[in-house]
Amino acid sequence: MTIIKALSLILWVGVIVTLFVLARLSQRLGAVTHARPYYRWYYGAAFLVGIGKIIHILNLQPPLAASPNLTILGMILHDGFQALGLTIGLIVTWYYWSWLLAERD
Image (cartoon, rainbow, N blue to C red; front, side, top):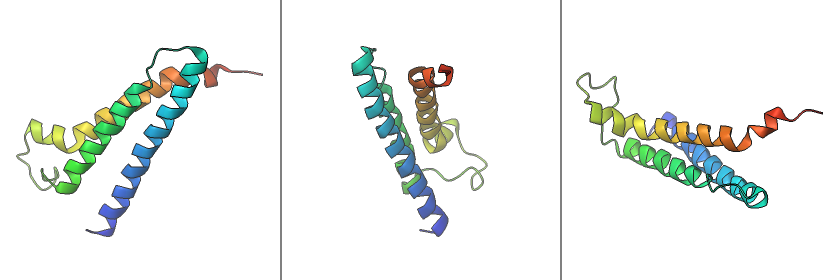
């Protein structure tokens, strides 16, 4: 494992931990405000990011630069799970926490 792969792994573990922290904070906020449990989407997003990183670590699909004939399924397995997880996390974060941007003195 090269130093770049090790640092990449640390980065993605940080992203997964951040999604779990946001899930817990959103769960507590939702309990106080009686909001619908959209925080569960964070757990799904963390799962998708984790699956994408496991596939990347196991190197089940070669990176795009190494294989010009990579199939659509290969691209989905290689980067799609991580991208989908981050997109879900972004949308849920915007929905739950956008009221912070609207607060004015």
